[in-house]
Image (tube, rainbow, N blue to C red; front, side, top):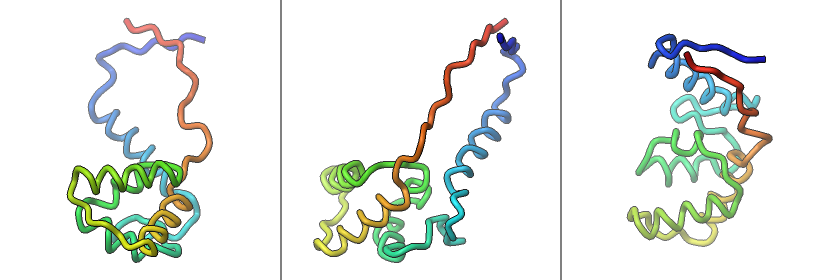
Amino acid sequence: MKIHVPVHRISAITICILTAALNMLGSVSGAETDSDTGLVIAPGFETVKLNCTVCHSAKIITQNRMDREGWLETIRWMQETQGLWQFNPETEKEILDYLSANYRPEGIYRRPPLNVQWE
């Protein structure tokens, strides 16, 4: 099946609406979330909120999905290049436990390519 989409029909508003809808899907996991940050309320939530949202929005967390190693690499990058302080081992473990449990990769993120002919 071919889909014909005139280029002039795609607007910035449409793209923004679709992006917002896809971002909302990331938080529709059934888990309770904090109304201020959108972070999942689970063990380690307070530690993450106190340490991570000092420098950046919680959306940086909620829009990403990584395994434990990916989160650790991200923390190390922030420590090496962005001025993030060193955590004590217990705090770092709690942050990594929380992030890898609540913001881990899930399922397939990309759909198969569409067969689109632009006019």
